[in-house]
Length: 486
Image 1 (cartoon, helix red, strand yellow):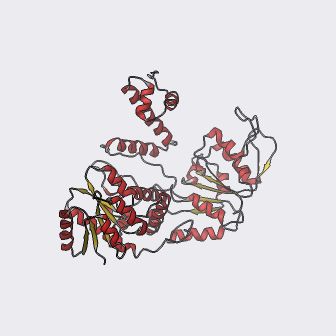
Image 2 (cartoon, rainbow, N blue to C red):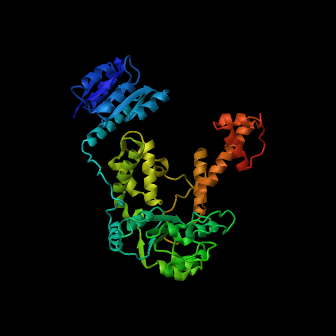
Image 3 (cartoon, rainbow, N blue to C red):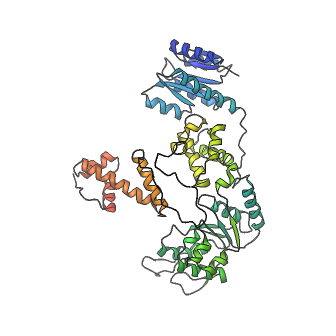
């Protein structure tokens, strides 16, 4: 193992770190400035580099940039003043493993250097990621069954119904079915039927003729025509309005449909793949879904397992998502320690693969260092719920009715309140949650700014960091009273 290099113009700090690391049987080499350290790189490299940020001549940031340009995998720890936020941010932007804030606790410093050392040793054994990642990942037996089904269905035009909890990857499977089918060179069109208002969904699906309704100034092709000769993926089919189910059944039965306001039938050569997280059999019994449409869709059913049914795939998926998000941000991929990966694999993750992907995006941006420990994960995953609170339940079975959430009584600040409000709305089955909460957030900010500026609109806009035209438009859109010109 190579020595740990310490670069600091303060001899006392070099001495303290040398002695502390010697007690850990770790070899060190010290430099009084960045210039000497850079010269040493011509003939040797360390296992870990620890450098002060402010030194005569080249700074620690200059040293960091020069080292990372030639040795991107070398962990570099920057020593900075406790209150020097700009330096800390610059350290991370430059690719530092982490930073030590002065005055630092020597035991914590040694622990951080050990983490960097483990990262450096692990770096040498990490295999390069394959140039092309499979479209769907999974080694678990349940996923292997899904792969076999995709293979069997690849050359067929039969209608497929994909079921599974939210976040399990139903659209990915639909895309795979299309990609490996004879229609692969033709369009793949996806439509979430739950995300389109009822009065617009018919036009979205089937298109409309000019003058069919107010605002229809030209003929518009619907999703069926857009997907001609290809595949139409209808997500959340269980939420389709009952009267539109009749029209969809007609298309599936005889391959023809009418545009809204049209009188001539349009022929549809489209393979339909539908998906739902709901129990369609129960919705049929409740009179919310047509039984004949259910049987027409349910020619081949493909059930996707929840992540808790394939927990052995979590490490594979986590590594993939960490590489993917690092590539998107242009940074080095983070890696999970063995203990953190075991902890992650033990979680139920009710949001399934989508939740795991979001978590890996969070880790890439927020976790310190390149190797992620359990303590680096979000607090809501690692901490037990407050006394008297009920933790989020495991995912519901298909068609089950969600029970009301019992929320923690003392959320952590306004972010905690926002999270609770979002959780409550999502649990209640509301849609467009981001739009609703976003408008409430903007309204609260603008009202508070206007109150602070005694209604002076331009002053409020300047304080908020937005333009005059923007605040004027928002005041009208949000129906805010009490604003006046300067």
